[in-house]
Length: 459
Image (tube, rainbow, N blue to C red; front, side, top):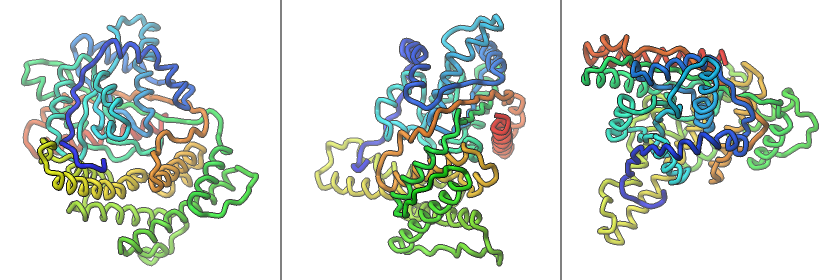
């Protein structure tokens, strides 16, 4: 990432049935070995079973739109397909063609930070990549083809990225809804009459035992790393730890405010009074966080000459794509023909782009942080998730890979299968005009957002 390179190559899906069988066979052991997850259960699996049965009979095409709070989510979905759906099918006497699986859409950037082997694995498990932040027509054509012709249903995370919070759904990207309407359009052009559906899937994590001691130890580690004096405290109750977390958050914000004020010459708003009202501690914290996030993104946007508009996710995606354009150069396709001087200048631009993107990476961790997440519902899960987000931030600043994250305790996962949303029923309105198409995509995205938020509450 510090050197200029040719454009990113598309990684075509190349499903390997033998590899898929191997993954399904060893998945439960892998989850127990590599993750803190000790139990995965699911509700309304019968709905998913019925959809698979209809899919295999050629009656429907559908996409699973799943919540994406953590990097372990794909493992949980694979467990749902390979273990829980077949179990319910046997209990109900339903004969399904095996394997039970889904093609999936993943971010093309994942193999850049997780390793090329992840790109190989995703490809051979039937995944197709897409570059976020631009119109990736190659990726879109591949996903579109799999939706209408793939051996399995599709799966994608409409939030576009993890947010680290089990009970907060980030604003959904409209791509899932648009893919649904494209599938309905392609089926109509092909003279096929399958119904197109989107199936919402909720995923929620909770701790088997409340890991307050481990949370306290992690807080101590973060306090030491950020320069706070570490006091020996025997109690690990919420009433003791919450003030420590607030103090740590305020201290980290002060450090970042000074960083951006001194070295990037930015002016931050006053954090004590807004519209004549004195803010309480949580409100001031949230206000300061939003201000620092805005400044951090603005610095990256200014360098890449980008507009500062849209929500946090939109702005992050634009910065990411602009950075990739500086690193993975269209004019470097024949990189061996470049002179040493041209290559060196390209490397200098790539290095600077990478470090400008660093500001965006900090913001990514906080896109769903409200400042009152713990106060409105003081559970150990919310406390742990917030502490881990701070841990993630500190390690990004230190230049340390934030994966894998600390395992604070064994967790159980609740997957909730929602009711399918028919895209086909909305298609007549979608195709009536361009304005109607945009409205239909917006309404479907909004409806999906509400359903996923409801599944979070239910879970």
